[in-house]
Length: 201
Image 1: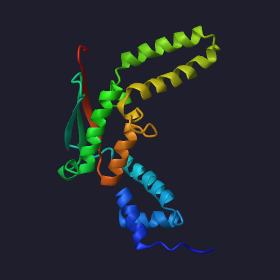
Image 2: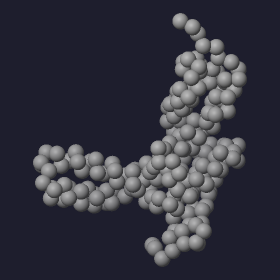
Image 3: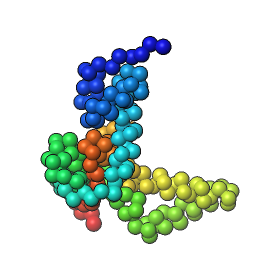
Image 4: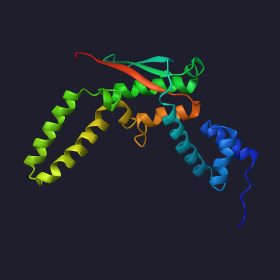
């Protein structure tokens, strides 16, 4: 079987695209048999796994981003944290903060993550869904499973990290955060946000 030659140029190109280390890029290219798209995918998977491991580390640096809609009727403040000032000054980190602020203005999430959604809100939704499913005549034993599916769908609608990114619905906001965490090697956390809409509480 012919072996694929991995050139330094291939490694460099992959490194520029992913921000991963030289050795990681070389290994990924070898594993993917020289296929750059496949190697990039491998690195993203490994990077996301590493980002999960880093999630416990303290993120006390970062930025507060803002977005005001052109008509002046919607405004957002968002705090995104990282571990070092070095990453906070990184253009890609600044861009992420800006994109998240813009997304919040457009998608109007109610909480950063699932744990931040008030329990009474979930209980209210659960009661409504149970009633709807029961009235639709579904068998009793299927109701809990259907309701759980609807609760998950609700989270995707209202939780920032679970929402599909307005610019590219194939990714969630959580994916964007994980990708940059993988690239920078730091824990990145969306701490909190406030969305203001004229005339609304």
